Image (cartoon, rainbow, N blue to C red; front, side, top):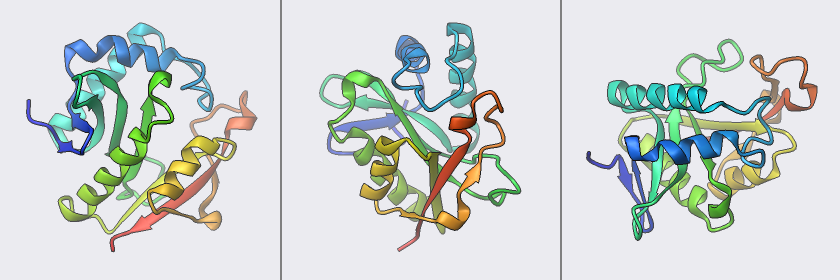
Amino acid sequence: MAPILETPRLILRNWRESDRDLFREINRDPKVMEFFPFRRTPQEADAMMERMRAMIDETGFGCYAVELKQSAEPIGFCGLSKPGLYPILPEATVEVGWRLATRFWGQGYVTEAARALIDFGFATKGLSEIVSFAVEANRRSTAVMQRIGMRRDADGDFDHPRVPDTHPHLKRHVLYRIGRP
């Protein structure tokens, strides 16, 4: 299976059966999922991985597996996808998003993958803008957004409609944008 993208240290590609344990791990890890209202069971994670794999096959967009070049070990995901938040965001909106297993945090992998995806989105996919959003308190993700050149659009901040009212501290999301250079 051909990679979607390569960076100096990473390969971004579609999901393989051998990635399943890593995908389950990141979707149940309380640190990784701190700003999400629920953890996924192994069955829910499996179904999500299959949806991601199919989306990449069908559209070329999605959350790609991120693999270390040096060891061929999967470490998480990073991708370009449509968030499906109309009317909060226009239907054509594309976001960059990510999750990594905690043992790979703090090494610049997300920044490296997200920068490559932004370049890919503009140069190859012809996008004019890419967004990203996170729970307001998620400083790790907003720091990545700033490092990859995104700027906060405070007028675009929103309460995420898919976050249940039982988790009010996770509803408010900050919006970041970057336009094609």
